Length: 384
Image 1 (cartoon, rainbow, N blue to C red):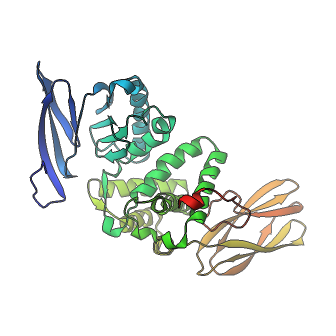
Image 2: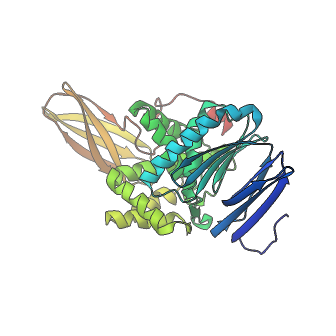
Image 3: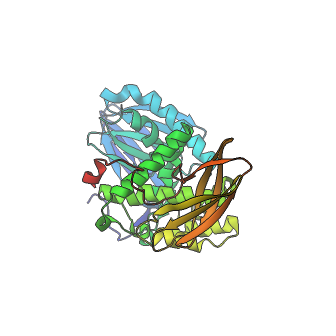
């Protein structure tokens, strides 16, 4: 109730704040000036472009600053966590440079990390607001910080059109959380994908929903859909288009919709634009359906030396999926990609040496129902 209510969800604003000298104030806008005398601290924040209503944070903060080109980085930390300021500034710098290279120039002139007396982890334009008890923890200083930095592109730089689905949490999870796991190696990336499938396997059917209906996290079950499943869909889209076109699609989406609203249709348009392909089938099956295909190996028979016939079956309704099938031979493993778009189909896998066995999607690259024995019973089945 401290703002004039214009009835507008998106505004431009100029906000001038004055607080006692013992305090510091930060708001979700461009810091244009600040000053202090013996009794007061003053700062002015401006939103030059259409923005969400301003949020204001005030506390007895120690402030530390560094620069990434034109971008001002700051920590506003309570005294008991102020020793972590250099780590956060250096790490945030690295993430801004990495994401700028992948997507486009960082959209704001500042990024601030603020410690909170409340046990929260929240993202806003320009800043992230993190419980001070979380600040020292390694997950916050790594993966979670990357997630919050990236939200200044996805969610703040390009705003979410909630009426047409929240794509930003999944894309941010994929480009931040998953990319950091992948940087640790194929095994770490595989474990994260398997973790997403295990969580989905534990999700009660009554809590499943089409991804297009996800707006925000209200329960652990909504995170399974809106974060994990959405991230997995971007993983499969990247496999479908390959790395270069996927990267081009992200940059096109960013350039078209910076400081605008966007939903899933704009995501689809961007990737169709760079690939020259109709991807309607992909987005319809993954956004508008509940559930996931259950894919089984029906049989595998040796046709002749080096060649195997593999029959795969999927549950109803059928999906159009590219399934990795590994042929294990006396000379090593050879991966084949087969397109399964009917309930059951047979594929011929050719090789030049004696086949020993077949593995279907051994690295968990397809969003699917896990089969019995692929995952042990986990506590997640209770919490969900």
